Length: 64
Image (cartoon, rainbow, N blue to C red; front, side, top):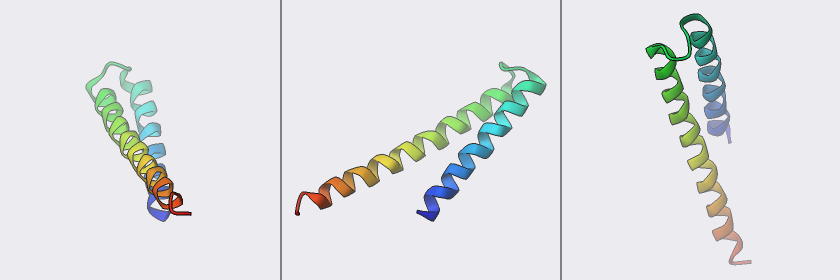
């Protein structure tokens, strides 16, 4: 689970960065949009990891 916590921490850091960039440069600025895309990538990785863990547990419980 420590790896998952690091990923959640990275998501939160990127979210805060995106909010700051949006406040300074506007929501449509290239910097804000890039940060948003990076946040999307992190969120997708986190969701994929969560789904993978869920299906691994389901597979393991089939044998009980």
